[in-house]
Image (cartoon, rainbow, N blue to C red; front, side, top):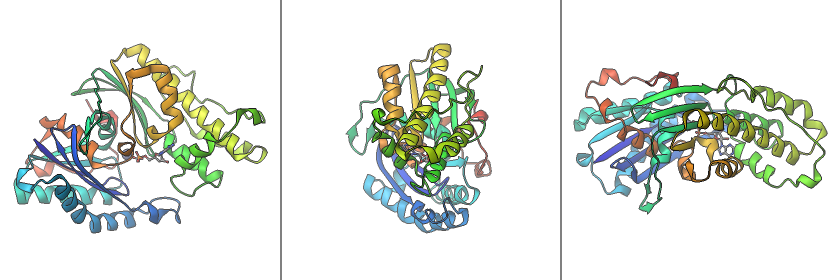
Length: 338
Ligand code: KG4
Ligand code: ZN
């Protein structure tokens, strides 16, 4: 069974072909992020114009790499939110157009749900990943726009546990990278690379807070951590600030996830979203949860269509020919799921 999946929620234009959901035959990603280093953030109008330009060639390339024709496709999956309205509209309109022309049903997908299912992909471009995720799961979604902790007893129900009250974890990484003048945009990986060079023996004793770590819930807060960095930044070297900031984020994410683990006793923990590519986070979670914790393959951490195709496969019941039901919703969250 073949799913053609489309992801255009932010500044990526991506189309994939998934076979039986969890095998990815092609996953073409075209990003306009290089245009936003000057502005320090996505300019929505520019992003959606680029997506209009890219969507047809990206789709053709995905079909060609997979060696699949439109007539072979069983379902079209598309991200309907959260994201930028103009960007979502490009993907949704394209999906509806394909549905009308080729008479295929459409499966609307919540982008954050897509991140969770990125960890379920077990064959990527012909390579067997050996992944096996079992329900019930606790999922920690850490991306540029979201930080959410959810419990999924099975593939058809979701319990929202908590999330960030202010900045998302990726946003905090990017803002601190900007404060340290490492990068104007998407500086998370640069900050993490610098943190990895820090030698603890050279520490000047910087201490940063672990916001909400003792709160009686599953919520997070990262803006206070960023403010603490601003206060200290002049007095310490950049590598120490990067290291201590990263450690503070790791500690809070690990503590709250462990609390959810102890409460819900899941078979697996899934850590996903752009920030799950972070090596310090990966090693801390592996040390704590061993093989119970599952991360997506690195290329599947940031936005891509393959994860949308995989999430759609676990939600075939949502497939519809009623295209009026498929509408972009920029503020969709994991709380909307039942
Ligand atoms: O999931 P994603 O591609 O986009 C959203 O849906 O938001 O996540 C992008 C975020 C950015 O904030 C980026 O800096 C962060 O993920 N990120 C990282 C790393 N790689 C990507 N943050 C920390 N360490 C990394 N290695
Ligand atoms: Zn994302």
